[in-house]
Image 1 (cartoon, rainbow, N blue to C red):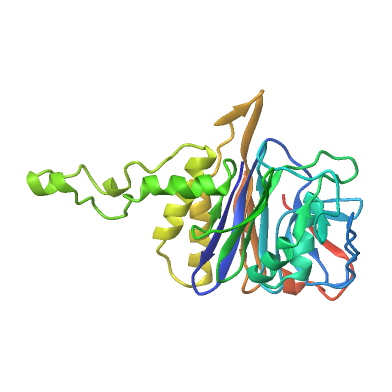
Image 2 (spheres, rainbow, N blue to C red):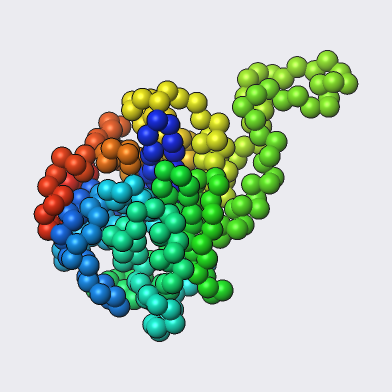
Length: 314
């Protein structure tokens, strides 16, 4: 599950819905510039860009679901079961990265999507776990103030896709979502103006008829189309309050209500939604049981240190 979004007004914003069936110790985490990142198959990084995002912290290591670095590069991992494929051996490419490491690895090194693309084109994602935890099957949305890309490693290799829609959900692979969008080119925020209007005096029942056919279910394909449509049609002021509110309105439109999705007696819901003002380093979030929006500014903390700075979400 999950939906991620890139959004621009006067500033640049990035965030996501986390749709899951359980709590996983998530909290907002700031990683200072001198925290030592250790990697399974790569050299440790002692000095890097500071970053903020949502993670669980296990044995002093941040397992990020999403994060933004101080240079304006953003990244979110979204569930990609059955399609994701990781190599059991290493050394086929210049870099070998475990799935749980890929967000800190990219955000430690890269300032923008072009640098991320170059780094990942020399990389492979390997089947390595953290502390014997199950290996998460993911693909990743990466964005900066100019554009979005999608990273997917399947059996056919590692693929880097340009993402003109600035959203990502889950299965099927991104190329399928891209082709699926061609079925919805008729959608418009305006009143429809088809051939029947010209041949006979027919009036629509009311406003919104131009978006008849816009999906409203919780499937990955439908959430992709709906979030992309609302993002493309978005109208809001350029100020912070209007921009953040609009961002959350778009995420709310594809949020999962507890009880609406059930799998083997597990209920899924949007446990948290986040929106980062990447330009200013402010991380906004709200949880399922808290309607208020909270904010944490990365630059209010000591990002020159060597520690993780943690904030409980609830």
